[in-house]
Length: 202
Image 1 (cartoon, helix red, strand yellow):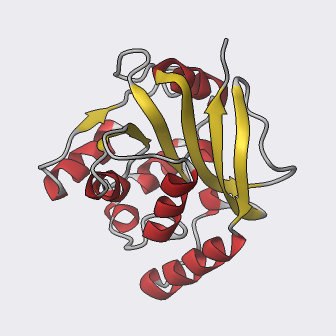
Image 2 (image 1 turned 30 degrees about the vertical axis):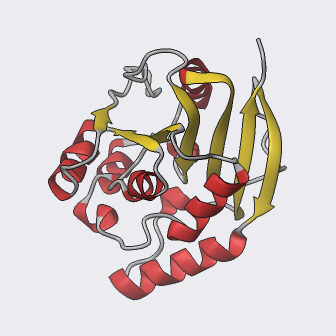
Image 3 (image 1 turned 120 degrees about the vertical axis):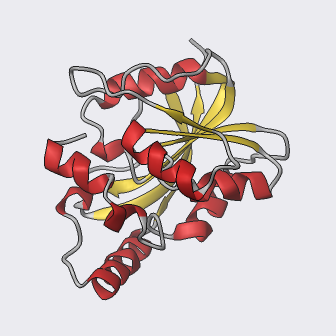
């Protein structure tokens, strides 16, 4: 997740209180849910859930949603949203994500918005995502990027991908307007995308 200054920033009140939450906000989340063909009753894990905006969107659509993030973020989230279910995710000593606090095959989908690129050991995180997904489960992914797309993710097949660079530009402009500060360096990249992946059989 980068150095300690970056970790502290993404747990700061300034970042957690920024209204759009992630590029595209609710519209991007709904687009991912629709393209992932998620339906009422599906179990969804919001990985790096932040303030829980997407958890609430899933629940509005009658999905069974759970959010997980670092303990310092979850403490903030629970204060502002005590009604919903959030779990703490300890970072491993090597900077990886550590084991997710869920049983194997627990979820129909994992939603990860603008977060995977911030995790140092992405391969260990992807292993955990594969572990907690049911057979054929979907990874709904949005993120900044540099280089070739769609991303090739081990154990997954890309079903849908969309260039969403316009949402990143709008997000950066909103950040500058609301905070008066330059857009955070940790969110750097050439563009932004939305995508849906399906877990392949082992």
